[in-house]
Amino acid sequence: MIVCKSAAEIGRMRAANLLVADVLGGLEAATAPGVTTAELDDLAEAKIRAAGGIPAFKGYRGYPATICASVNEQVIHGIPSARALAAGDILSIDVGVLLDDFYGDAAITVAVGEIPEEAARLLRVTEQSLYEAIGQARIGNRVSDISHAVQRHVEANGYSVVREFVGHGIGRAMHEEPQIPNFGAPGRGPRLAEGMVLAIEPMVSMGQPGVRVLDDGWTAVTRDGSLAAHFEHTVAVTASGPLVLTDRDGTGQRRVSAGGTKQAPRGIWRAGGERGHD
Ligand code: MF3
Ligand code: CO
Image (cartoon, rainbow, N blue to C red; front, side, top):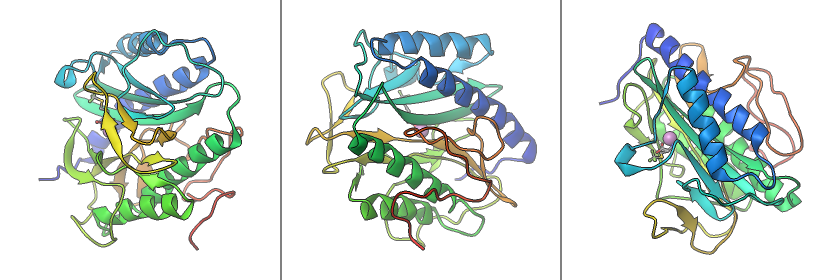
């Protein structure tokens, strides 16, 4: 069953998700060569607890930390450690919180210092695939319209979509129905209705799509060792279109990880620079 949220509940979810966005913004600013992922984890936990929230991942199925910090060929679920980040790395940061009975969940992939243009392109294409997908989160569409939008944008730009992990509904539980794969033909699956809240999260490999999980039981890495990126937003399906609850300033402006900050007016989801689908 897919739980639809009332306007009041979406307002409460906005608060949880805004905290996620604030934490991610702080972590992005703190990311630099020499910083360890454990230090970023400490920052995140302190900020969440200071705001009255609870880290959602910590203790979830035994996960030991507040954030997931996945470096380079690590796709998702990297466990924070004493590993110091190095210039040229890319770092995927995933944050989840529980605040006022509701969950928030989002992820970004950021550059550590200067990164090669080919890595910057992976970040741009993956983030843009998320915005293509968000553009499909409309009443009357179906779940796989979201999935298809991710796959189409990623593959048109020469990369692969990871298939073993999916996005999800979110609300009073971190993982609710429906599952949201990042691939598939359009027009399939449940129809989207007002009040659904979805965590949409493309995971993209620069090379082959296959992944494996390391012996720590969590860290998913690309089998071929190629770089991977992950972006996630929590999005409400509303009568006036998709509402990005994890958008930091709530104005519809969005951050583009590489090459500075770009702005897109609300409702315009496509940025220039990579291959679109007109
Ligand atoms: N954003 C991820 C998800 O939706 C993060 C989960 S990490 C875990 O599943 F540790 F909590 F599993
Ligand atoms: Co998620």
